[in-house]
Image (cartoon, rainbow, N blue to C red; front, side, top):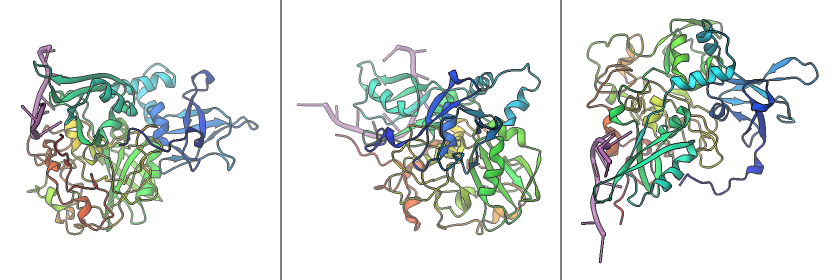
Amino acid sequence: MNSKSENYNEDLFEYIRVSEDEDDANAVEIPCELDGTLLLSTLVAQFPGACGLKYRHPESKSVRGVRISDGKLHPPSDAGWGKPLYVCVFPKENKRKMEDVSPENSAAKTKRLEKKLTCSDLICLGLPWKSTEESIRQYFEQFGEVVMVQLKRDKNGTFKGFGFIRFATYVSQMRALAQRHNIEGRWVDVRIPNSKEGVVPQMPCKVFVGRCTEDMTADDLRDYFSKFGEVTDVFVPRPFRAFGFVTFLDPEVAQSLCGEDHVIKGASVSVSSAAPKIKAKSNQSWKDDGYGPNNWDGNRSGPSGGSSNSGGSSNIDTLNMQNLGINPNGGPPANFNLPISLVAAALNQAGWGGFLGGPGNSGPNWQGGPPQGNSGKNWNSNQNWGQSGPPPSWNQGGGNQGWNGGNKSGNWNQGNWSNGQAGWNGSGNSGSGPSASGNGWNNNKPQT
DNA sequence: GTTGAGCGTT
């Protein structure tokens, strides 16, 4: 469905030469969008950890930064990107972490960063009976290099309908976890295997931003925090509540910002862990109070921003999305609405605390911003927001154990979304639900 | 020749 696009035309896209250092030999040509901008996620797909670009001005010889806004890098001039070699800029966090280490080049930093974000095998549930290792590999290669595919069979060799895959890079993994997969007409669940629980890194990618002023929009927060690393999600509750949440691709960036004060629009905001310090009283009402699919009135800015679309065939796995913080992004093909919210928990199972920005240049495209309409319940009606501080748990897990809690039962990881909640399509939105035709996530029909 | 929640040595 989305493994190929019908009207993909390479010629349509301008390619930019980018290197992670000033060495021309390391340059990679990466495609920008039709509007001439380069998605940060596209950049990150090739240069994990990158948060921007710079280049040497041909005449002045000085280094110039490339303007970035809302996840998009803008060409230096109307003439486009031109021929200069663009060099990746890495978040200062990377440097911070490396301060105590001997000098390393950015390549080494990148590698190191990548290494921390370890890959895991991914289990694929609900594969079509006719799947083959080849067909599965072929499908998942759109997210990056696939290094392993194992389809499980019984003694007789009959396929059991599930299997395992492994990507070469964390970024690819994130991209794959970030969305739903329709393979040959079936919705396939891709997750971190239970057996890997606790093995994969579990770090919150989301931070709580306190003391926000009313004039701070999600985009303001995004613009500001992008300089520390790729921001994959921003949430600012409306009506005004003096706080917001910012999710980074890199959990380390999120971590390193915690405890800091920052000045945005002239006001000092405080960054702290998005995980609840302590759970206040009885708060298991989250599920029912607003974090579900029915909720979408927050002022949230999607990974790549942009105009919203009419929905109908989104492939984004919102569950994984929230936790992974992935930003399925890339190729020209499909466009998606941004189902950001719900998801928060998927990553428990996936093990990633926050929203990972899933870059990529070959995956589904993410043109649409989040649904803007106020659909259903809202923040107002949620009495839990009356308390100061973040909600008890962004994980939405019944266990209410915060980011790293090993909630093993009764939470979203157990597939609570599977039974078709009223969600997306039933609230006056334009329908950015999982499937255009169904009422839930698992709309697979038995095959014949 | 069928099937559709699950969790990997075959």
